[in-house]
Length: 543
Image 1 (cartoon, rainbow, N blue to C red):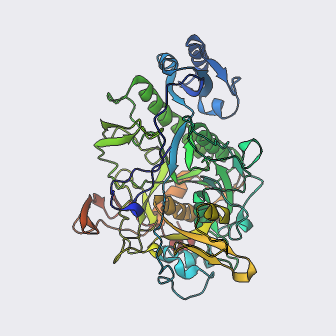
Image 2 (tube, rainbow, N blue to C red; image 1 turned 120 degrees about the vertical axis):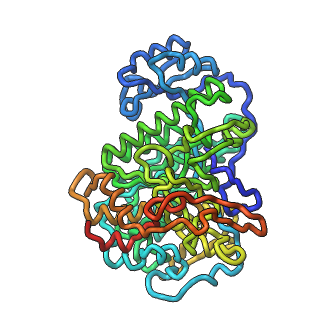
Image 3 (cartoon, rainbow, N blue to C red; image 1 turned 90 degrees about the horizontal axis):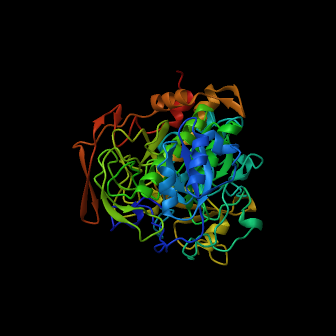
């Protein structure tokens, strides 16, 4: 899986980076596949696997997530195996267990004036840097409805640094799980996650070697503890449900396992700040794709939808980043960035609105567009009147004169990850204005500016957690509130935002013009969905 492909080559901070790998050689070893079967057709799928010369692996007896989501794990030796299995009417999709997505964020550019945007005031030591919390009223909502420990927010991401001083008080270590095994190298022998650091290449549940998941978790629920910052819902619990590799890639089975687990343990909200790949747009029958590629895309659409449905039916509200492709998802025309893994397999193909960006366009998911500090749609944010459900601050370094990291989102960052990336010196001091150190109380902790729809989604997840804290009833894991009700309240409490006038909004990127067309009305449009999330309104309104 990879990050959303940028459409503005001149703007490194407006789109996520793309992970690269050379083209894969012809496979000789057996590959593990996820074979999704139609309702009641498990035995037919097992027969199809065997008839194609494959073997059933994993939970062959039909237990665990495989049975709950309607698929079997199987091993086969070449593309013909997948195509032969896919020919059986009992089978609806076949996908190799490989990368399907990547986190949707990008580091902010470093600038020496990172503190220039801060404002004096009360709250946590770095509250002055949090324009995002002031925009949605979270700084005031914290006093009225900080959330309750009975609410569980699952972060499906690259992990959470549960030892970070501004995360640890709200981190639920007992319920946290890591569904990922580190892969030192990819299928081509190139470095993927790097050397394993833990026994069995399985990182502890309180570790995040990438930093993306920790930033997301911090925005949701960094506590009010006199350190660093406060999140949108500083009183709720954070559960690490890791599905992302150290390298930032996500694999299909880990994503399915994470959603299934969230439903099983009573998680109230999950934040999914990544999107499914290797296909930027998943098409079920694109004539430009081979039979195997069509089967893979069908498997991704089917498998993820089943996992999302399973979680939602168990009471989990599903929040997703919309994407950083700067694209109207309702009117896609050309996809020249797929399949994005391994690199070198990309091709140009025509696509239309029947092709889906997953999970942003999956059923039952609340998809979040991003805005900058002025309230305009961030230049990198995807949009679409059918696709954008709601908006939230995700940062936009170009939302103003020149470029500034302080227009992006500040949240907690793992010290280990920052050191590995060279963002901290041997003396512990940050190297550049995109990283801030807070040593209040004698213990130092680190924070980083990032931007992306990945940063917007957790603001919505935090507001959802406030609503569940206020209106939830006793249920599995603590309290529960039907996802449909959470969604209704989230939209009702949002601040309405109309399309710009004129609707064809022109972004000026260092003299280069880019136009995005906004469709819809104030109550629902392609830039802001139902509006910008409002934590204060969520903390005070009565339905």
